[in-house]
Image 1 (cartoon, rainbow, N blue to C red):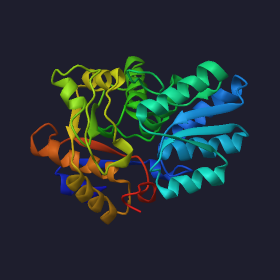
Image 2 (image 1 turned 60 degrees about the horizontal axis):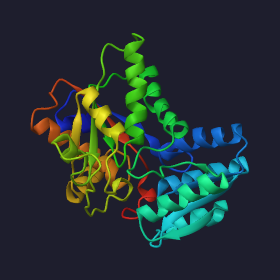
Image 3 (image 1 turned 90 degrees about the vertical axis):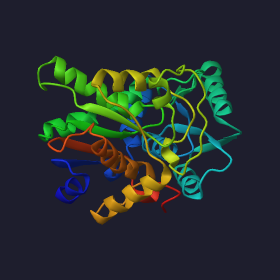
Image 4 (image 1 turned 60 degrees about the vertical axis):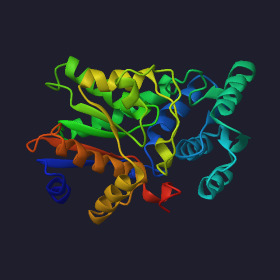
Length: 298
């Protein structure tokens, strides 16, 4: 994307457009893999905690697979997601907060044998491995297509996508297919991972407010910390105003994306400005979802 590269003052910018997936977000990578695993082990029902793209994606893939799907959501579920769950035939269970959602999923898994698609542990960890493995394909695809970024911008809440990308690239380096890891940057709407990297206890709660719907939340996971440290990257805080400007820049290049994906371009500009990205380096932007998947953008 020469125009974006010029705006960011870097050698090149590549785009990984996950909005092209069937339900419009990168969550389809996880759902395809996890629902396949549920079928493999003979599960009859999938349960998850989500009030966004993961809920819609899981409901769609469960419908296609003939599995029951139950989603623990907040009361204030955006209408576009509520409608999608109804059309896909998923059951919605309304919970007051994140801990209540996790408790519901935990009970359904431990007492009733449902197959969990997302985290239900406290302190929070990543989603179950069979889903997170699906995100490895994101990096494997761009490597197969000849892309060799020096930096990768990943909008991040609890780091499932970040870990999938890291684990795939790590293995390619180990096998000799890549000379080195690119630096992975977790893009967050307010300080969470950045505070942990600066010394705060990982299991703390990091409250904050944002319109970046898909990367909201107050927890940090070990997989996030490990991925950015091992790759030599870090965390970049991009507020809503800067994310919106990044979204406008991407739209002008032909990509209407959710707000947190726009934050990835803003992060590229910020890292270039403070010298952590050189003018001669290449950047990969993870466009995690279409703009109409974001209540603040639609």
